[in-house]
Amino acid sequence: METPHETAPTLSDRQWAAAAHLLALILALVTSWAAGIAGAVGALAIWIIKRDDSPFAAEHAREALNFNLSMFIYAVVLVVLSVVTLGIGLIFTVPVGLLIALVWLVCTLIAAFRAYDGQPYRYPISIRLFR
Image (tube, rainbow, N blue to C red; front, side, top):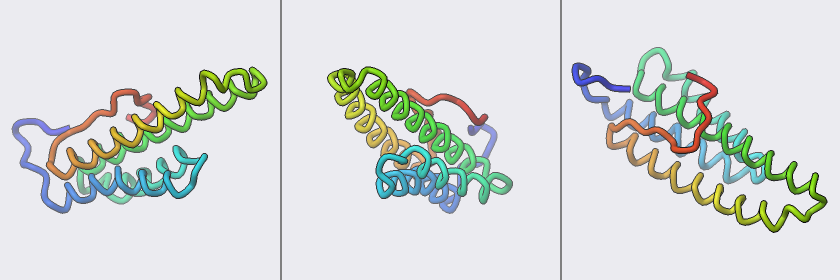
């Protein structure tokens, strides 16, 4: 993200970076099961808007995009597992699903705060689909 020779991100850059995470969170929350996809769309929109003029905001938006797509993939895997096991897998998938939702919420809030503070952030369980 930022090297020691670069200047600190501006307030606008930090706001856009935090918005990438928060927009992803809000869109995901209002779309229920399609959470990862809607969140990814929000992050993608900010990445497209800021990729040429704010490397800091673009990097945070890309992180949010990758993370929300990852969360969607994890949710789909859990749903498929539950269907394939004819519901028996619910004993496993429900607690894991709740854990994934909690990690998603906490990590997104941490990312937004770190972005607003002008710091880099890497989501811990994110698949790096877009680099």
